[in-house]
Length: 277
Image 1 (cartoon, helix red, strand yellow):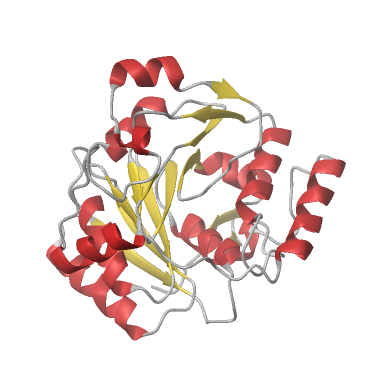
Image 2: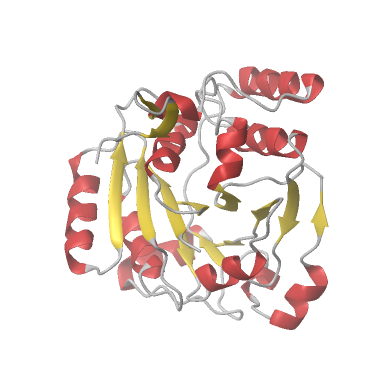
């Protein structure tokens, strides 16, 4: 089972460096790491290139022009570039517990996508981590929100990691799916421009396609570094797109993953195309 860890980022190389460092310290290494870059300046590319040279894990950089918040499109670019069976999405401000990939593999199952949880770190805790570059966060550390999400327990995880077909609380800062399922629904809808709901709409179409939801609790720990709240200017139009998908029970989006796939002119099938690296 090959794992692509896809990390979405925009112009925050210091924080991305911490996220990548934790991704490279896993008990089970991902097959590849793909940085899905929503238009960052050159410092991010320089960081990825440097870490690629220092790592035995393949690290790729998929970059697009800065034309506003287009997380849906840059995630699709990364999914198309992926050479793995299974994709795990995190944000570039997420630090990973060392068992993160191992835990996700344990819960990967045919017919399901996976929603994990996160620990929310305060601005004070985040500043301390950035200054010290110490990525270890403990249950008793001050300035930690939703403290229970710091607990890793196989026993508790088996009890509380439930399956359902509900849409609430979808967050792609800790989210996983089979690449074949992303192809089935044509990935993220690139009509979503501006913050909000592109992740929920993607999950809605997976549910409409019969792909159910597996929650992970007390495993696959992720630590969310503080950042200011993103602008919500596009939320009303994105809410309308989500509502349309729900009302019409849409499975396929017209403006999606196939934008980044190329046709094989000999076999007349779609194959993964080259993204900017």
